[in-house]
Length: 473
Image (cartoon, rainbow, N blue to C red):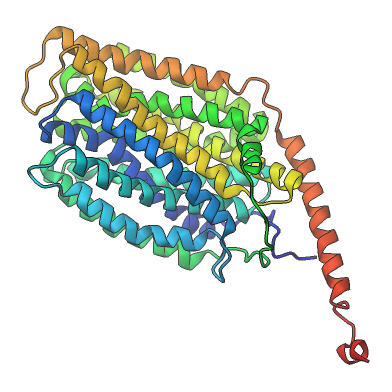
């Protein structure tokens, strides 16, 4: 029996999986720049306070809340010959071109209005690419373990692409440095070219199962409240927010911390992100395999504990010691790589549960929720941390000399906030119920329903072997 609506449970061959995973690269290129390099870039360029920049980016998230949920709803309603999510993923590419050009090439007289307007468009491009790609991945396989494998490779390949930005000082003999404001426009062009290639590889190499013609349904607020208040999904959203906030709290002050507090020059600051990103390439598939034994939620909790320990070790390393810091950054990145991949694989399981309970596909809205938490977490980190830096009188301008108290305040922000937030996020998954056994039961029930619907449709059409002329007589 075959069904156009069923998600195949088979194992995707590695070459096809790698081609599909290439589609993660554009989003990881953007999130790396948005979280780590662009906030300091605009802080040094704009004649305003860190608090004003932090509040502006926080306000962006409130606006973007409705954008993500709206996109998720539209994706779930879409029916095209290309599929449901694939066209939206492809459509995100031209939006990315425009937004990246404007954000990475600001005028000399840049102000808060410019930052707000073009950042919004860049976040829209990010949402289209991430939502489309993630929901598309969930539709490819219905297997509990295969989803962990798929999202593990997606994260690993995406992080590998983003790591190439950090390697630019090495690859260009220090001519292009993400931490250098003069290199930002060039990096924008690199992102546009690489993203174009990655999106086209993904779209041309991987098909999406064509869903049956949509029946008309009236979607009410109650339907979406059921999505948000689903116990499993509520836990995932809450855990995801704190697990993103943790590493996100260190990202916007990464450049400041390693340059000002740890004493590394700007080229080495970028290079130190290579082991952090490279650890994700190795860590994501490893955590996905561990999850097949321990379960996804327990593996996230284990990774959270590891993150707290390795982040503490990183802080104890004396300033200026490159290789110990290099190894420590790898260990932090290895533990942190489990969060996104496993949470998104768990969302696919919740999508199956809701489809069984309601008979409706809500993967787009579900991934909109966790995409929103990812962006909300990274932006809230800026909104919270930058005013604290203002409070301790930290000066972000290039060449500024900061007081020991300002450097100490910077260090405290980098040390304690990520550890506390990640521990809280891990604790949100205590008692999580949707494990491998339950998801297998859900898939079995879904397949039984799909088989029944297929048999009913065949009977209405007269059966595959019935003579049409006989039916007409």
